[in-house]
Image 1: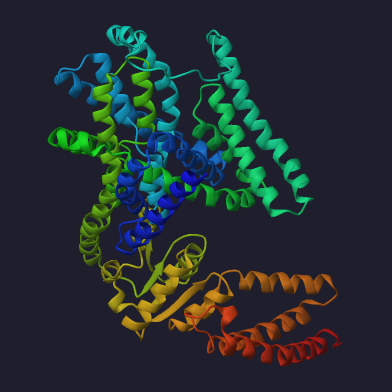
Image 2 (image 1 turned 135 degrees about the vertical axis):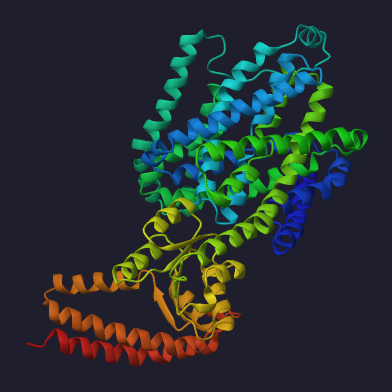
Length: 618
């Protein structure tokens, strides 16, 4: 127990120190975890820790991540992605594997070994890429969606790869293994062991059908039963039970646990318990993924690396260049535009965590010699370690270059640009844009979806791809000449920081900002924004008006009553906002609490009196 607690303490303190520092430096949490793993590797060696065993356990974070990704997708959306799944995903895996195989044979590898290496290197890191895309808010961009399609295809492709690897076995290695040189890998439980082909297929389809049936028909009754106990921890336990159970079932029939849980997530995407599942699973996913990244860093064999430094670094850089080239060509063929093309090419240029699984499987089946596999493991780990650097290259080199190109394109437009800028073209910004377009204005739109923005350009709107919080992008969009700026992006912190920047740098600019909730209104007021729209406020007022009508008020009375409430609420918000201090939690701000309690008494008396007068009037 003492050893376990000491190990847990080492991992936690390394993560707590390294990750915030890396995030503050703009390197991202993934690189922070990798660096933390490298730093604690001597301690793990001193404690005689089996890093590979911990890594296999931590890989369950990838399983949980794909379950959460599945919850965000509806089956219709997944079906609409089939062209990218087969075209981009299939093309990337097939072409990369064949090119690596050709390079391997050119360097003297037997074709079976070269093909196995190609299959290993064809896979990218689902864990690192999805985590980084989510952190940077790029998941909904065209490059992010294309990357997800390829990663999903790769996870599916692991299944036939595992079936193909034993057929590539070398007779000499098999003979050596029979004499004990390859080690004893033990027995694993399987529901398909010893079955013929059609029986394996039947059992596999039955397992998939069980996942779909349980997800569609049994999770609702199960969660309703658990809800009767009114115990939060039982919801957490049930959510974990579902994920672990599905992963176990997939493993027993020889399928990828990550693929099985992804399928379950898609099935549950329309469930009323979807958000409960997300909130229960997400903390475990984050912790396990962090542990996984740390084990990747800790698993680097620096002795072997120093002895073969030039070879391994050369192979790593060669792999990244080759994969990036293949991905870039596919992006051109499938018309992925602008910076999305580079995001797609650079983001997936590494090897992935399933490469560790395939390499151990190839060694166990006598396909790749142990000495070569050890070197390839270093290539996989180093390429994953370099992935955050590729995203930094994208952010700081690629994106600014495209901003310059788009600025020149905008300067060539005959009307000289718009006086209105909308940051974000989602469910809020899109409606604002339609209203302004309907009134005859042509706002400049900034968003991450290049395909959507290309469509807007075709309808005469100025459109920019990228992060609306970047000063260089705002300059390119014409912020210096703008009269109105509408903030409709996601994320409370991003909205607040953008509002604060605009208030300080462009004090005469009229800013309309989207507020996520009541506390966010106070944050935006403190940041200098004075036209704040709560995203659910107006719809809530309309619901209140309809409720009053159902309770007997006529339309005129309901409108008047809601108008009184709206006026008093707005005045109260302004008074309370003047006592708000973002550096002090609201529950600890005595001045704010005192002001709120003082106003609440008078506010309720006055409001009730006015509403009663309106609703009882003839």
